[in-house]
Length: 258
Ligand SMILES: [Zn+2]
Image (cartoon, rainbow, N blue to C red; front, side):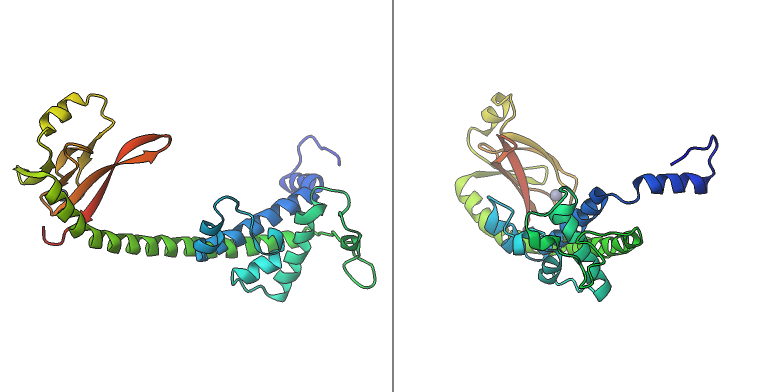
């Protein structure tokens, strides 16, 4: 490598590429990126299988988690012949060539072809743009899968709240007294006023603004846990464990027509 006092852009690129273009670490990191996208696709498609069953340990991936061709199969990602060869090449760097001079098993040190021309870990900067293409394709697939999953979760959550709303309303009616103030129905205990005033630390209180009608009110998990606001939405506060302490969490339930 040499330096000229005022290199042109082309010269700069050449110098840069010469210094950094090929490096086992960069292939390994590119491999990790592909691996993570494939695992992301698996999780997006079947969280109950890849996450919820293995909460203690996220390592129960097929074939130890670094077999990229296998991961792609599991994730229903079809690779063309070129991509399959590319992924197979990258995998060697993920498994060992990105970090160690030799593999743990002698078998892994065999040449890539019968003539013994290519060593087990060989790379050319020509492969870099192929990696980019695969990366962007997988990234787009993951983005779409994540959007679809979020939409599915939202629909499921909405339907479960629509079902839960009337049940919860019934329970609250039995347990609390109802007061209507300015079109808002409050569910209160007899001690509500005293409780709301004395609980100065506010661990049990939540100030709420309704997104539906703009009404503002204060909920108190013990003394005033719920209201039905002007738009017919039931707001209910419960204590929940959140980042190391109990905090009131307010959920809303549509009651359908108020
Ligand atoms: Zn409202």
